[in-house]
Image (cartoon, rainbow, N blue to C red; front, side, top):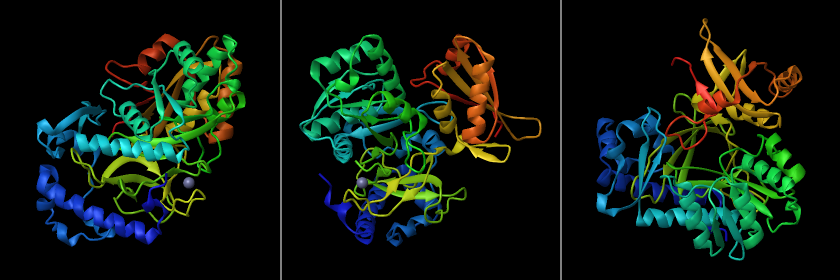
Length: 430
Ligand SMILES: [Zn+2]
């Protein structure tokens, strides 16, 4: 099930997106008070924006804009809204994203073609190991997509390895949707309870939230650790609430596939100019076909690069690299540029490290300092040295690493109202 447009040439895909872009601009001018005022203030005549390149005339939309003018982005009256979702804002409060009936259909289509990309079809049964409520979009999107594909779904939700295994043994799902580090917990439980996971019905996992691969698409330490025990097919999917669109790997696992009917992709530098071909920059998106809260040139904060050679699977649409990290979380440490996910991957590889948190601050000369607090059952000097050696070898830097009480770290990791653990605290003064 490859959408026709994804098999077309690059130029056909571009022309197709330019037609869609014109519709978006007309829609925003008519229905979005935020964008109408943005066009006015910047003397933008939308009829003059005809190509994807012309988009550069339009100022970008930032996460701060979404937070500050949240209601002005909403394009429909309240009685057209079906689902209310929130996502963490940049300035403290959550940002609301609203979806209409048509947006929910679009979301279902998006996930259906994304799952199909990873090889799931209507004969499969999928076990959902993520939250479907708590104002999250993702769990609901997965449910809608699986339903649209005609596959079966078991909504177990997050956590509870015992219930997950009970469900796997009872309903025999062929795929799981899970955070990859949770797979380690499943393996641990199975080992302790003599469950032969390699003989289970599960053949693949759609992995969310954490990167699976290095930039050359080789497996990260976390993925290697999973696969060394449980020989399953791991697929990465990358999405965000604001995009309402997923980039999911195909069987060849060469980056997340772009669906040109759903979103326009730009990669921008610090000055909001497009980066040179193949360079890293901030993923900036324009949603297509969204009714409730469409976004134009929205800067996602995620640093990626584009791979645009045709893929062996038959899709010619571009592919996104694994996310290097969040732009704001970039750390400049002793001449090296680092992003937290690389540090997480390294720390996750140590079984003896039970939890951790990374704190970044400015030192008295204004450059970045990294402090890694780790919790372990026994605070051995050997463990500390081993973590240090790994940092030196893999990341070529040696941050400050200290043992802390596990409870104390847990408190930092789960602040009040937070729906996800915090692994990174930024104390830098901006
Ligand atoms: Zn492919």
